[in-house]
Length: 110
Image (cartoon, rainbow, N blue to C red; front, side):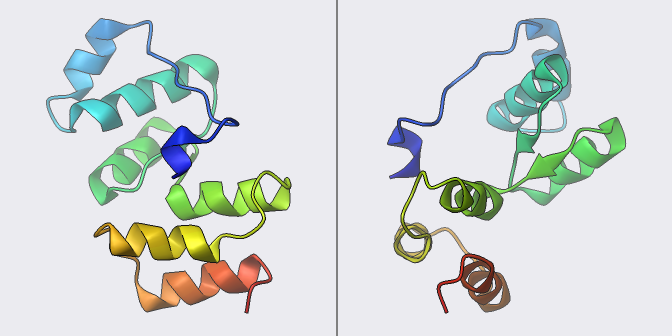
């Protein structure tokens, strides 16, 4: 699955205090992502609405899992997103039918 992709790297936040402070309103993973994004001046990969809203309020650009898959397809890192979207759905990740179809359209897979 995507978490094992060679083209992804895991980075930990340097500012542990900021992660702890943010964890008051978000879960630990979302807090870590937002702090790392701030530290690296990068885009945060975050799917949950609360995390996305906080990213916007902090001025942190953000995308979700589907956005990452689209970027990976565009860069030739994966051949297709449809099997990965289907795998996410099979694992219980909810994607609206509108998002599913739009992602496939943007990937040129319709």
